[in-house]
Length: 364
Image (cartoon, rainbow, N blue to C red; front, side):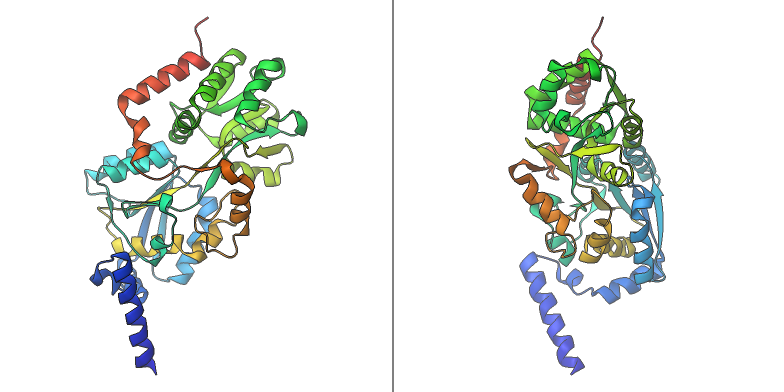
């Protein structure tokens, strides 16, 4: 009986390998064999621009599921992560897995040859927009939102689209003077990504909004937490282009905060993960990445408000499908691919930041 079941499993693996083009030697590396190899390595080193508090349950569950494989988790900002990873590459590298919300910087690292390919049933289950070159993988989808102070703004005053925000600032600027906040694209990798994606989505409205921010006065900040603090305290009435994941987590415990999914278009970003080409613990890295992309890992990650499963076959994540249906045509996922390199071109970045500074901080 065991022999028949084993033969059947081997046939399934071989068929899967033919369908998805997986090298046969890799296809025959069964999960038990990979775990055995990972356990010999003993550790997976993760560089992440995801708060450790959000990943803690994932880490604990992984180590319970795979005893003997320790997770060494380094939490840092997206800009610091990028700089540190590149600097260490010349010395042989430290990180096994790199996981960041700065999608464009992740794609640049992959494009520059810092990742290795990985194919498995878990990567095959991802939507096309969440995979690039079998090296970069989206692990979540997170809407980009407006945040407002519920004590100081009634719901009928809150703009529900980018165009409505523009009209509101033109019609009634005084209450918002000096009380808007958004990312500083020069200091925040995520902020630069989101603002430059806005240019691609609707350049006319975005640059008119930037000019409106300049006339009224906007507080630009490098971190989501700082912006949420300002909105919650009333120092700012509206936060623009904020990560919905962090905003929704905070709003769940802070009645002062409200969250808006813009109905004209809602950018949806994904935290991108890849396995470092110089990974010292490659088997442990593959084990972690497959766990993170598995229904089990996706289910745990999506327990955090604002984090939605990138897969469509996670039964527990009904909120993800609800969000897709709610947004309808406004659902605008940022595809992982070479298109994200456009605004990392030095000339384009320089021109963007110059136009941004001229708009939000015009000369007197």
